[in-house]
Image (cartoon, rainbow, N blue to C red; front, side, top):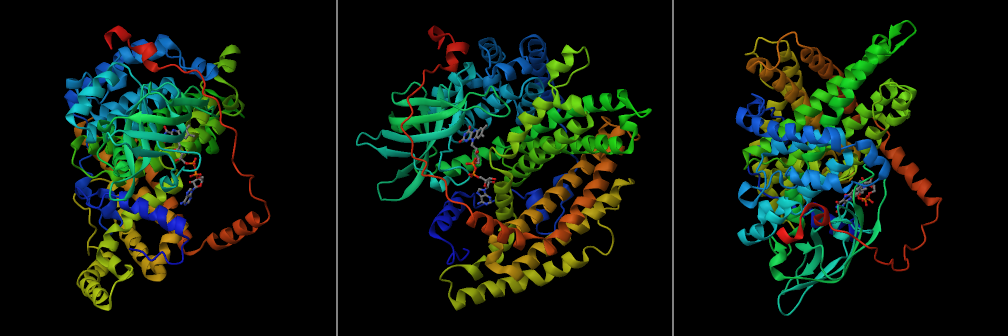
Length: 633
Ligand SMILES: Cc1cc2nc3c(=O)[nH]c(=O)nc-3n(C[C@H](O)[C@H](O)[C@H](O)COP(=O)(O)OP(=O)(O)OC[C@H]3O[C@@H](n4cnc5c(N)ncnc54)[C@H](O)[C@@H]3O)c2cc1C
């Protein structure tokens, strides 16, 4: 679609692989995608989806049971210090059913909604980031989710009950040479005459991988007619030739069972392919739509704890004759933490509610929630850290040991950082969202840039655009003669009208950039990132307005409640962010940064070749050794 002539072949291949794995059709109109076309459709956001009473009760019951158990059993600090999740925790979370939160009841799971799933993950994260990351890797991207979405009935019956009982799963995509770019993957699966497959390769940073009973493994395959692709396999942890060669250790979430996994002639039966040969990357991307909703929830729920503690701290800590929260600098920090936390929770709940509707296209909303919440929760953690002064840098135990009230600020900071990297780094999320944001225009005008398009083809595209764009363009310049949102007697309406006008400006800016830069826009990552960030900010702002108005109507929040002031502060401060992003599109240092980076890279020599002696396999255990009695398995 876009001329890759001047690109090197590797980059073009990676882009092609990503493009081929995209979902082409939109299942439904997307709130976020529409915003990039200038359409703020509040019908898709208002009333804000509030969890139904029955569903909430079901989630509450599990969270209550979990809390009762966790109080005495889930010590996040001890787990962080030991860098191990102890056996009683594995058994405890399995006994509570947390290995199968979303697995349907007919397969032995709890059969809970996505909203309850993210609420439970958030509840776990408040005690222990490592345990939450373990459960999230297991259920957001591990075996249960792709099986639920794409598994055959036979596959579901075979594996889901085992998982629900406490067998742990892992998702193995990343390799030493293939991080953000799956096209660089070298792990290969070769089909045998009897239809089975043999896998060879190495998978890096596989969360749960050192203890997993089951893996989803992505491997290169070549079909009978010579077509290359990536295929997803369910692989048994006890397979011969599957080896753990290194347990990776990290800055945060230090107890996760993450490792370098080697596949040496691992034989996998034909029936272990999920979705079909060559469809692995599509499966991974679709799985991630729901999967990406775990991180935003963890980010929001942990930030709520940070907010509560920061508020107490800001009130109780007196310096220079005042509470630190009464000094202007402290007040600003606390207000920002409060606003961002409310907004993060809003985005996480919105994404989960959309997912619970099923058949709604949530790719943009989920990706935005992952990107925005992971970035903002890092800001929240860093701001709260600063507000806490020296005690932020001191460990919780050490503060406790001096008989002061402790809070694991430094652990939160360490645990939070990874969310900006896993499940798509922020840079990659910018590119992903930008591609989807451009989709509307590419559908209309993409033919102009198509390789091999004839003059006639191009004239047809121009004819089509001539019918669409004049009306669209004028509509986005002028909008409605009257403010679009006038029917609510509410001060937040002026914010909605501001958001609506900036949404049209966003669409026009994107359009102008496409006209100015043509296909080269694809290479202007920072321009695209700003456009994506503006869209994300505007969407979050609109959703917070929708949520507070809805809460007021259903009575879970009242006029005059602190949430009103929090949302008002949030909206005013994000207006400034949006304005700055618009300015930076036209006035920035992107070019000088590229030149400097080239110069700096030109001064250094390349790393030596990464060849290394083959690492020996290490002794391993399986999660089911802790969670499932084998005689009952
Ligand atoms: C704790 C932890 C747990 C993990 N769990 C799993 C797991 O369970 N399963 C699994 O398969 N993987 C897992 N990963 C891997 C994780 O998903 C990758 O780290 C992530 O995809 C990024 O890949 P990378 O680290 O190789 O970075 P790279 O791809 O090497 O990127 C390095 C930097 O370059 C940027 N970059 C890369 N490409 C582009 C581009 N085209 N444009 C602009 N910028 C770019 C990135 O944003 C990043 O800043 C885990 C990693 C960690 C650290």
